[in-house]
Image 1 (cartoon, rainbow, N blue to C red):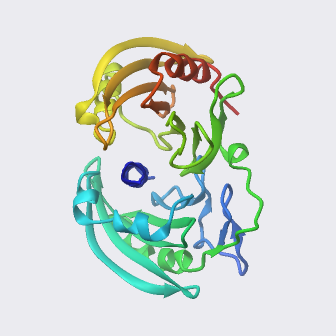
Image 2: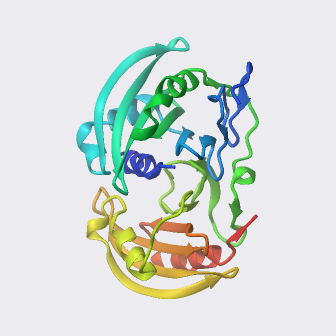
Length: 306
């Protein structure tokens, strides 16, 4: 579970990017909400955004117990992901205990605020994350109102794979679709998060959402693998140029250790677009390195934008 919490925080740290009288379904989730005026459905993630202000509301669902996930939201854990916990308190939301938080994060010399609502039960957790730069603080009240308008419908039909802006083919691997989190597709060895099989393999396919100023793409890839949870232990074995569906990038293989100090294989493939965004394919496993690396590489080569 601790590894899963750090993955959860990793997604949270990466999240920087017409009001109607009725609820709008949040694509790729079992949630609906009333977005603030001028916000449109998110591009590449589940939620809503306002491009001119740089504000967004991201909705994420996790197949993990609420109490366990919330317990990992402490100042030290957030700090390790470059975030500062300003305030955290428990409230009653929709008849259940929930947690609201205020977090700040500096990205590219810009200070961002994150107004967060966390709620769930013993099986699932929902996080609604309202993000806005300090210059757009006038949107705070509207964003908070939208966050607390969220409704979770457990019987709502969701096709997470179809809601992403890209796809991969896992048919020739042992992987199964597990979840979509913040626009990133997650596949595991048993379709559960975290995987419960002895072969704890996982592959994540995501995007940067926004333009990223990268002068040296190879150096960026090397730094990125070190920024992963427990990445300071990762040792890069190889990094090679690769082109997949006309998008160029680098394929990287590294070895490190997970939270329980098990040796871990890390496969990272980052593809850089001409518009300044990138796609990332990240595979990890603690067993059968040779076979899983073959699978990770084969799956990565099926990547394509829709």
